[in-house]
Length: 267
Figure 1 (cartoon, rainbow, N blue to C red):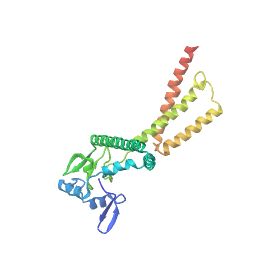
Figure 2 (figure 1 turned 90 degrees about the horizontal axis):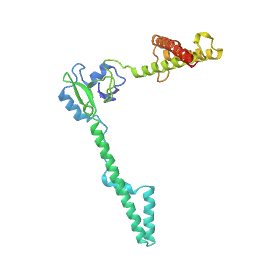
Figure 3 (figure 1 turned 90 degrees about the vertical axis):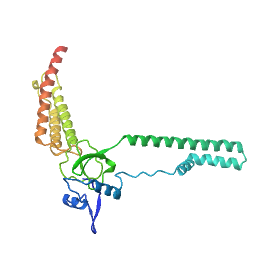
Figure 4 (figure 1 turned 30 degrees about the vertical axis):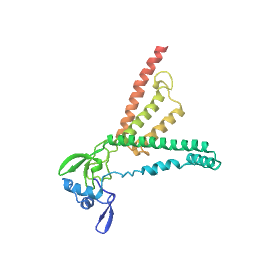
């Protein structure tokens, strides 16, 4: 649901982010099943304006005049003044010409850069899926208004401040980061146990130091997998045990088999 951070309800100013869904629906005067009508959208668009940050264009004259303001420009201007004072008019004309040419070139290049950016913005049109008159339609994101019901899916651009009315937020990518991190971590730890010496891994016991390091790292990684850490959310015991079992099977089974096979070929 599209909303503004703050709305006026009677004489009480409430922050909609902290309000309940029913209060937000009442303040914005919208039905979740129907959305806004076309006439209401036009009315709110006239009241609130487009859903975009207004860009102010600098006055061209003032922008050109700004090219004569700065350390480099001041130095050239001081040379012009000193040349005039010393009556060295040829030097004054040359430096003044350089100053003007530099200002013109800088102004033209800046204008070209702005036009390139404007052209790029026009091509990057962002749309939103909104519910209006009971139908889901696609509209430019700049035309959404407070009270619009929007539909978001994975990978969609969030067009404005919203309040979740239905569905749930799934940190899928963050959970995948945890899964990938722990998979690589346990794989590396158990592979170290496999390649520590020639022959199969069960033919000799690891040193106390190596065993302690592997045990400590395994415990720490398990705690991260269950409880999470910073940008790595917890994934729970079932998934963690699956990662450990998969890493054990691949490292102690497959890696050990190929290691011994290659060692025998070298001999």
